[in-house]
Length: 413
Image (cartoon, helix red, strand yellow):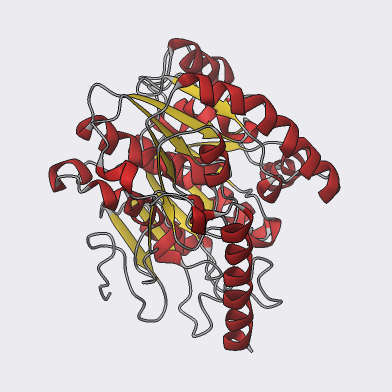
């Protein structure tokens, strides 16, 4: 069944790309690669992302590479409005463009409304991008959609690099194949888009997610929450129970048991957004001392500052683990196997708890009824791991490939 689905999906991709190839009359145009061969060191580079918050944090790993390879270049970033705060104020980003692609829009609007909103934001961003005068565009998302290669083409950016799997790949100056190994991290996959530039390894070795330093106002948000004048003497750990898909969350009893154990030793800060997560945090912390709810009480910068100054972050498969990795905070997180643990793990001082099951990765965004890849993990498992200091480690009750190696290299634990 899975093989048949992949075959149909691959056939559909080929048909759609062939339609693009003909619609843009590419067979009758000049050789696209000529612009790449003649390119001087770019003065302005546009990174086209547009995915969710966690994906955007991962994508920032390409910035140190670009800054190292092209120190004089100005870097622009295209993001969805839902993730724009990730790169706002970033010291290495000069331009920010907002396009809300309908594919990644998690609002409750209909698909038609999402598409119309996408067209509206795209129309507003196009002249901004064209007037900025980019020399190089990098479409970093290695899937059929969302794809902004047509936007880069319409903005007349001369050199456009992307992945061959994307919908508008025929419009690219050059494309690369996305690594198929399940052990290659998403940030390493995105960095493959740079391969046609033939960068020195000393530049590509600097790949790491980076977030701006926390301003004093963000730290003050935390101080106000804890009722202290500074954070120097404040010990706390973060529990982030929510994620973009509730089906990847752990039961409330799981977090309640964890809070019961940890709140005796250290202050717990519960982070999240929205009424549902606020209710969940209230149910988890009811009757416990040493628990502080930060749900809807912190700005994005305040949240990043909270993660940066925490001893440990506990959570699930969400953006919180990637934020912790970017700021160097240890995390212990529970992952399901649907999308591939080694690919989507936090690339930093993290321990990922998962169950090794033969059906993983299933690539089912909705998961399955039993979710055996997550069930059976206990709060005691997380507590037992929170003192580990390995760079990245995947733990399971059965042997599982571990990411405690160089990105893309399989290992055993």
